[in-house]
Length: 246
Image (cartoon, rainbow, N blue to C red; front, top):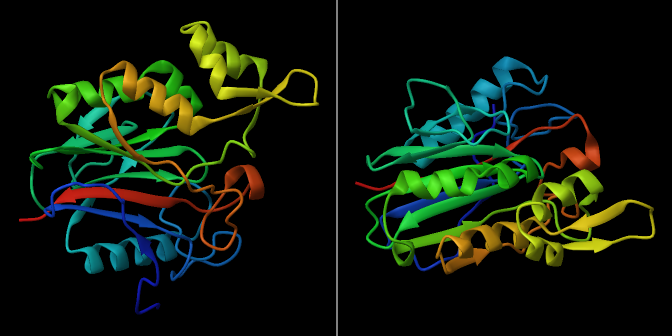
C-alpha cells in the first residue's frame, strides 16, 4: 500500500487559517489503470478495496472526516455527515473536523467559506448543476450576506477544451442573455467552447459574491496531475475538500 499522499493542492485565497482545504490529484494512490492511481470514487468501476485504501490514506493524513456524497448533477445541498453518503451535489458544515467533499474529473469543484471562518461548503458544479442553480442553493445554505463569502474555483475542464452543443448554450442564455460571453463559436457547426469558470463567476457575482479566486487549472490539459472524463472516458475522480480546524 502507498505510504504517502504525494500531492495535495490547497486553495489560494485569503481565508482565515482555521479554514483548511485539500484538492487531490491522481498521484500517490493504490488504483490500477485506467483509474491510476489516487482514485477516490466508488462508482467508476475501480476495485473497491483500492478505493477504500485511498480514502483511508486521505482521511488519515488530513486528520478530518470527509462527508462523501452520491452525486448526480443535482442542485441538492445537505449538511455534511461522514456517517451518511447523501444523495446531493453540495454540502456545508460548521462543525470542526468534518470535511465537505466533492468528486470531479472535469466538472467544477467550488469551495466556499465565510470571512469569519465559521461555515464552509463544497459544491460539484458541472454545466447542468450550474444552469439549474447548485451555486445559488449552496450560497443559500451558508445563509450569510454576500460580502462575507469567499469562493474558490478548483480544477475543471478549461475554456479551450470544453466543446459543447447548442443545448448547453441555451441552458444558460435562455436564463440570461449575458451568458453568451462565456461561449465561443468553433469551426464545427453547432459547437461552442464553454468557459465553465466564467459561467460560475457570473452566477456568484449575480448573488453579490465578489470575492472569487482560482479558476486557472485545466483537468484535460494536465494529464499528469488530473483525471479527465472528457479526455479519457473510463477514469478516476479527484476530491476537493474543505473543513474547519479545531
